[in-house]
Length: 401
Image (cartoon, rainbow, N blue to C red; front, top):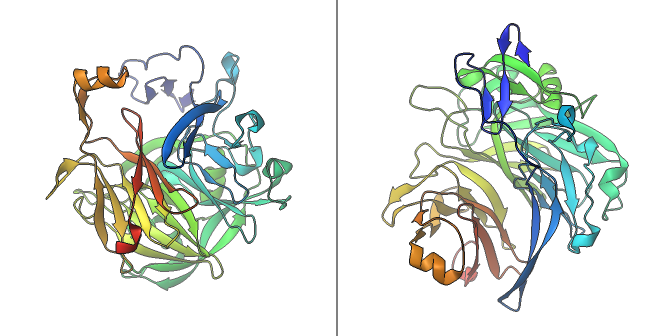
């Protein structure tokens, strides 16, 4: 495709906007995304089963109150011109893999999805988007609020958040400035009241945009996002994990803040708390340095109300060595180290385990997908590379988790 006279080439290696650069590698084969259901019974590993396939770039997703999982495609690639499908949707996965629905929930929007969280009181589904400084914060208001497998497929309204009132700011701005860049570079305690704006076409095609904040000279805005930002809705940098707990949503923006060159939306990350009853959005954690928080990504909340963050900024060096971390947040919004990635595998260890991954130092790779089992006794987390799921047992009563 072209932006003006400038070619934009899309391939398996990403998007190339420089006409002098080599072409990206072509796509070969079929989309290899999907989900697997893991079974853990009586404290022991019991097996796994594939539960969805044919999707692309599945990212965090999130649980529903009725016991299914919503999996999210973190891409807006369109293969329909070469006999494939459009991507960028949410799908519903059942605990019985045979009941998973391999049809997209189109009404939830086609954009670069990261995660979702369902408000059990209303059935509204809140959705984050991970697209550097060209991202919005969405919610889906379903027509069918019966709360069962397939109910979200029956249609609804997609909406985007817009800052309605400036409640508290460390650095005062206008309402328009707050919507455009206030969430990109927050201070702890910044607080806003939100309203929700209808998105006319949840399945609109992406639009090429230029001159975005934080040095994003050219990029793609998903169709719903372009509509949102055109209506003055709030811009996020890279919306990541989101989790519901006790009438609140905890929302992570992994790149909120500034880098060494002062570019907004290029920082170390922040955590927002949205009180649903008042629609008050408050910054409860802002990292000013990677030792405090190195680009937190996925998030979960324990049954006791403690927040757990998965880092995705590479290895952090601290008193426990170098590696990515699971962080906890205390009630004052201060981060502490819960767990450290110390995974380094040699050929002998891999052979003994019967695996085929490469021997390497994996300590800098991200934690992701953290969640507690329904009893609250076991915290599951993934080491995304080389692909390991761990089960962590308390005792949790010794801390706020």
